[in-house]
Length: 107
Image (cartoon, rainbow, N blue to C red; front, top):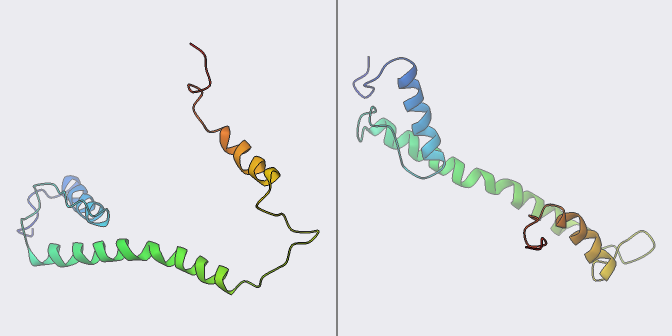
């Protein structure tokens, strides 16, 4: 058994899984059963931090690129202007169903 893993078996696996999950969330906590400061953990969790910090950026940047290349369509019969009261009602009315009821209830 490796010297960096004090608990073999299921608990050792949960320590490793928690170490990588914690590194991907960038909070740095870990179980104490793993060895302190080995080069393998430092480099592998550093790679996890970089991947999970920058990989989620790819989706929004790709969406922004697609929207930037989109052709402008002038207002017409098939478009909905976004600066009218009807648009505000269509956006705000469905979102009001997810609000908590306490602001609207009477004591």
